[in-house]
Length: 399
Image 1: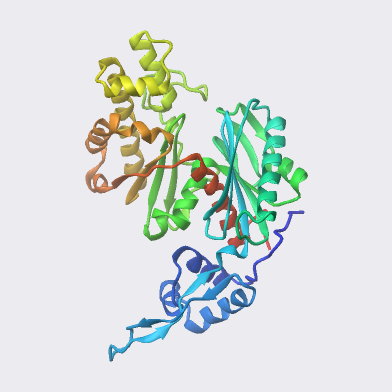
Image 2: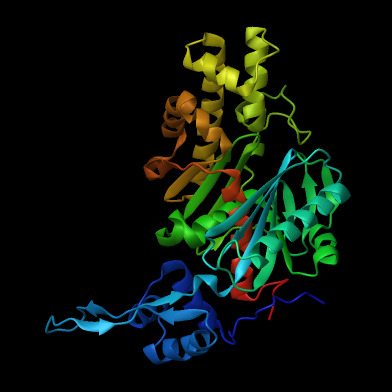
């Protein structure tokens, strides 16, 4: 039986879910505007929002003038907004070397942050450490480090193939995990609902509900770092794929076939374009086995031809992969994010040139936007997935 949030939402109808989603992602927003955007009557909006106001999840802001009458005389309206501190969430990001945890409010605003070093990636050890980190974050809420309401649940973001419906990490090459039931193991330790998702998809949910995707009809988030990931928002939803796998841009076979990827396959984009691949290539061509990534970036900025070649090669493959994705899916915007954007200037020109060469027709009009993200933002994305499940009543937070 699924665990329940400490504070259930009074949402009994799809209309109620739609209204709260609009207030959460687009508020402050007047009732009349919610009606216009959803197609509901103003009476239906009022009926849906009444229990949310009574329970303290939504409130009216101070009246502001409105000019939507024919005489042009402003009449006051009271925009609706969510009560940020009505609930709190925990988001956790897992990497092979560290755990990042945040608490957030109802709008995914970060309240507290904790980082822990990870020395062992064995699943049971990581789950124990995640549980301990969660308890530390829960204590921070209880001690009043930030004004926050009852804890709804915990989100965990992990790279790789994640079965979000069952909370299982099916395959994470970076972590060396296969078929790890993270939600079940975390739930046993904490007795709280746990939502487990692919890390890039979590970042995409955060952008969809609380970032650049709020007003976009379609967009993609491409992350560049130790891996190359892609999250897609198309036709009103973040794409999960029939089997929980979608947007695996880093595993398109666009690189030389003699290069072996961490996933065990050959010719993946990541074999050329990940930060690990760029560093390996720079070490190989310069003969500098002692180089770290910062050193490779420094060499490239100084004009070293071997280091520049590694970044140029990465930019070309990423540009081709972006063009393939845009040609297939047709998003209006691609957000380029992740820890690898620190060296974006080293391959931006080659990336954009290759993208322009391969984008078909009007697909070339797709905007490429750089957006810096920290690991705290990845953890925030995990919290955002809990918010979405909480509002929609999805497992494991079904009402």
